Image 1 (cartoon, one colour):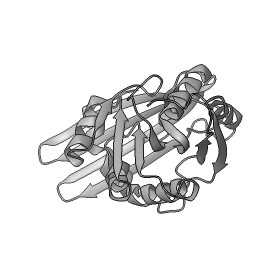
Image 2 (spheres, rainbow, N blue to C red; image 1 turned 90 degrees about the vertical axis):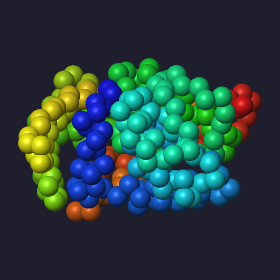
Image 3 (cartoon, rainbow, N blue to C red; image 1 turned 180 degrees about the vertical axis):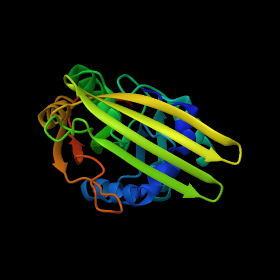
Image 4 (tube, rainbow, N blue to C red; image 1 turned 60 degrees about the horizontal axis):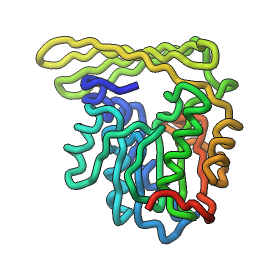
Length: 251
């Protein structure tokens, strides 16, 4: 799934208005990394989106880079982060030719992979960009047992001269979820409406842990970040540390 230009334009402000703190999450992620790799100095953010996490990572780590499939999201990130390398790439098979002390993949992006085999490929690609002892943090989409079939959501953001209404409907389709998001925007130019449909795989917790193990990472599952009203932002976080040994990835 590639977010279009309309969604990219409003993405940050809508999520911030819902209580999401990109800065707070990035600082907590940095603490998770440095608890396991105190000397970590470089970080790669996969599916970096608009660069909202990377903006804070760049204040903490000596060197940061991003990978993003959507050109519209990448364009927003480039305006925010001049001088930070932002690579076009698919998480299943990207190759930057170097390793990092940490790799992150947030925003439930891995859920948009179509199958367990693709999950294994993506986690393997991310782990291959880790130095031995490096830390991989992945935020999953919901598991089969905690996905709410038929869930509806709504949120309205009102600022000076701008109102954004965001409505969602989710349903289960086999081993996947279908999330339809509809926006209506009002500003000085009038009204604009657009929608997107995201299909995400309902991988199990064990499937994620198996993918980490196949990639040579010891992994654990920890509690999720929360929005300002206390609601969890996802099922949790998978945190893996790359084992040292032969075939230490890219150089």
